[in-house]
Image (tube, rainbow, N blue to C red; front, side, top):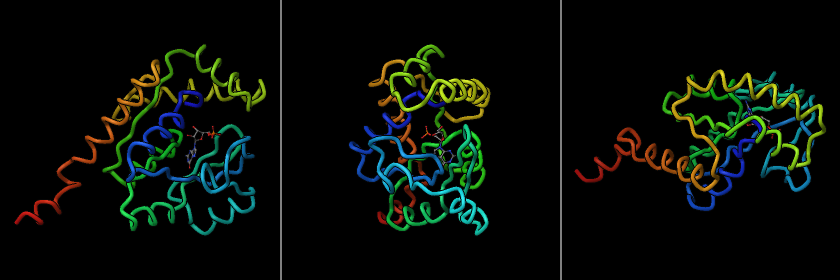
Length: 188
Ligand code: 5GP
């Protein structure tokens, strides 16, 4: 849900966990002030985006309030080769698609404490006009319907607590036996 602090939480986790990297998505939306091409998103035109869809270049993609967003297959492959863990900051359709392709992926749904708070945060951010904010709110209300199919639900009421909760989830996932079988071999 837009305005729940997904990117704020991600930023903090990247500082604390060197192996964790953002999956930098491709999008057709305009860059907000402060957003850097290649770091926050790969900003592309609709034609470029469509070419990538045609070339089967996306692991998943979705439309969100008038723009397209997608995770390039190459982004996932490059991270895998580098031994990085990836954090995907994506909406629910994309999350479901990735989970279907990568069943080991851990999904976390960030819930806002209230809709008033989402509205307040989106307004404070000052990057969207009133119409876009109301569309994002409407989309958010639809998105929470899907929350029960996620592995974890975290309410971002207190930011520090939400950061800790997501970090706990990441740490636990990293310590799953299936992720560490090479250590068994190393001991033998
Ligand atoms: P924003 O415009 O606020 O950056 O992003 C709008 C929504 O698109 C957010 O919910 C964000 O998580 C989602 N999003 C960003 N990148 C991707 C992506 O690669 N795939 C999908 N499915 N959603 C994305």
